[in-house]
Length: 317
Image (tube, rainbow, N blue to C red; front, side):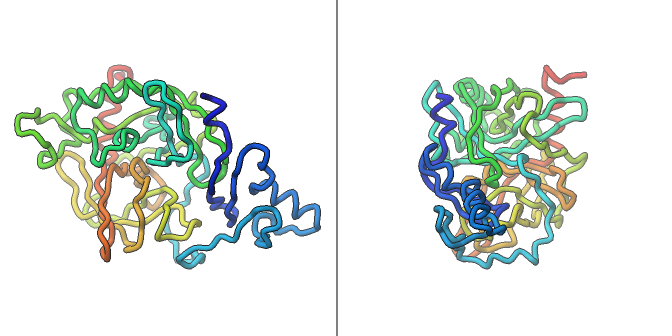
């Protein structure tokens, strides 16, 4: 399985930081990637690196349906190796590196703890809505045998193996509950978006640049920034996407509307919500897109995440 997921992509991957688009067709064609393009232009005396758009080495023009200029971007800086695309091996099944379903991010929940990779469960099981039930959540987590991830912004073109899923519980937490989402009237009131979260050990944070968790969550009217690469509706150089918080429930559930009316939320579930300083103030759990209107999102506040983490048996002081 390791050899399967460490293969380079047979498709296209956006090299966002280098203003180029790369076609990966297997290990033998590695030099058609960004590094191959760089080597070629050095040999011919050109120093523009991946900005060479002549397509002599397989580097295709980065054609976008939106302007490439990002002069108006005033969001936080997001470092490489902070945000990832996760791939989950379910019950020993092979991981398909071409099927991108979600986002994950490295975060240090507390100063004295190792970083963890944070994401959500429901995309991995191709569910259209978050997992709310604790029993179902536990079964899903235990079925994940392997976790792999790729850097979301193209800084590393390989998928690499991460650690195992961390056992967590939502028992005793009302944080994150959404009463009107519970499908069955007889279901327990303790159903919560916390059950959709998944934490993955990250081998002491090696190969990641963990984001810091804010001490407080956003309030109504605040701007939050969803940090991930998007498939449509924004320049590939934009690292995070602005949204205005419309509602913060008493249980820490966030509702927000994105500023960009063309923004696609495909594979965005699990992305961090950042404040202007780049600290994590929440996690984007799910969203809704409607033609002609800005997308809306539902997430969990940093307050809720912090309380939940501190209440885990393995993290009690």
